[in-house]
Image (tube, one colour):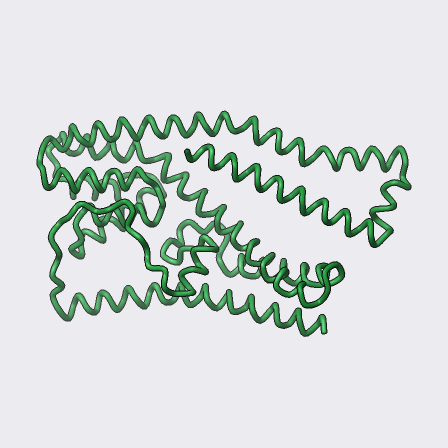
Length: 315
């Protein structure tokens, strides 16, 4: 029975692997269909309106919901330090190791969904770490990007040419992102819509500010260089404040690390002083279950502290 459940878990997580592959292939297929449609008929471009920061994404498909839960964006392969097939295999391995252990504690039937959830959360952690790492790199380069745009406009370049210069001269990963912005403008999208798409990909509010600023400026007029310079100054202060919050959060991270290491140090010291106390947790099945429950609670506490630190830094 346990073997059948493990095979079922493997098949279900293999469906996850297939869903990721489908998403990767589907994004390329959709792009080819859009290019073919543009080549066959002229697509009217709607009038420029101020884009909304709160523009909602489509949430109708189960695959989109699964990918959002996993923090996996098939349109951003450049953010993946670890290739997605390896992450899917890691999720399979975590589920395969979790199901037999959980079956001994909770029974066979509850072990299957718990093992699947452990595999999905393992994939979510890896994809989330990669996405946060990529977006943080883009975030650190926002002041330089806005400063270069302001200098280009003061030198007499139009806005589109200044953005095109970012796609050539900015370091990675902003270079690739602005190359996609320039590509969106090349197929007829307004600049503010292209920047809103950049905001949706990275989740950075600063690019939403830039899109709304350009949309308002195109309707009301005014000195674009001065407007962008004020925005760049505000964004530069936000980046500086985020770095300061990160430095202040280092103390909380150190405390969390000490709290995590301290039980293992105490267990090592106890094993040297009174070994039979530790033997109760390594040789007795009930003690093994209690030790695993303690480790799971410790991991939950560390993740909670990490989430609280991240929320405080984002605010």
